[in-house]
Length: 236
View 1 (tube, rainbow, N blue to C red):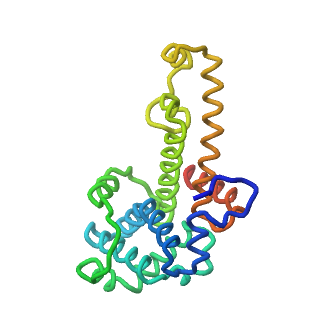
View 2: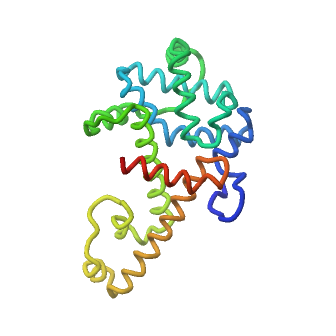
View 3: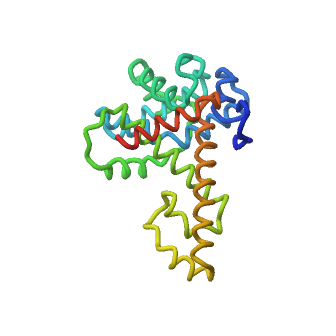
């Protein structure tokens, strides 16, 4: 997938492939959609739980929704929201939740449709460990979506720059960022060299962030606006 280029219209990012396919069962579109679903299933699970569904009902809804999405080619049904995967995902799930709850349960419990494997035990642990808040379920979904995207960005960066694992705290990785002097001593280099490495890592992080966001919008013209939106959600 070649979503890292700049200055072009991104016809080969995951969501743009799905949108271009219009819900058809083409192999490329299905693979792209499955990747997006595996990455962003938890925000929907948390949304369902936040709206009052118990664990079993939330699992049924999420499994049934993705079964329908992957097997029934329903992407074309949310045309006004198709520009961004985030908006499409929540809108389509809300409609499914309201209109097809019984279908969700049937698909989950022997409907004969293959669904993706999700770690609901891990998802429930995450949900139960969330801090208390007064956000609406919709705003909570968007926050979880943004955090999932940032996690994907960090994973992409870590794979791209394995030699800079000790610098990841400077771009949101786990742990506190250590002093430059400490890193320089461990690396056997100067503080100035460490500062340059951190600067380059931050620049690459921004590139990875844009690349990940491109995978969730149908047009590269939406990237900057989506960044602003997700940052606003995280600040709220």
